[in-house]
Length: 205
Image (cartoon, rainbow, N blue to C red; front, side, top):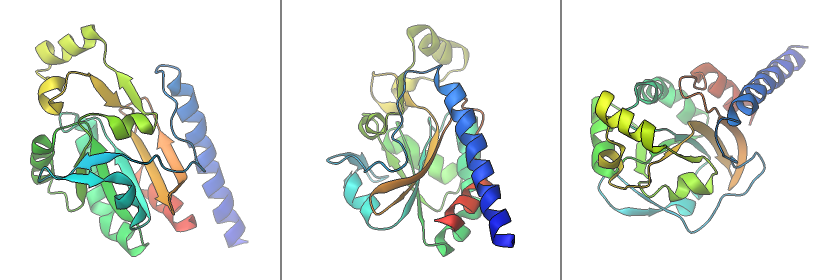
């Protein structure tokens, strides 16, 4: 009976998350990689030392919890990254590797990792190739770009070193054997997957 209740609880959680994600995606022209999809190939990331890393090989080494976040300039993102630090040991004990990707150039990511005292890997996707391959990319319009830069002193070009003005919709992907097992994609950047929900999902896989 307890097993059934637990299973029903997880199904309910996932159903609510799916409904919330779909309702928000109309605001962006995105088509996220779905559960059951195989990972895109021939993609590269940059580690914090500036070295090029093969994304497919990196993910194939161990079941992975992959976080896509907007950048170190985003308070919601840094709060999420710090929250994941708190459950990193539990994620490890469940047999999963934790890593995060953003369009920030590696030198900016290094600052974020140090400031937030992160003990897991961050990778730069400054060109937004991996972000785009996952169908999470959206372009900041010119008006918003100027607003960020002049009102909030956030220069997206300085952070990424690129002029594409692309950001990812914040997302969490759970990947095993090269296949997406679970994803949470929410265009409302202020709402992130709760840590206890992520752990509950990992325990079912």
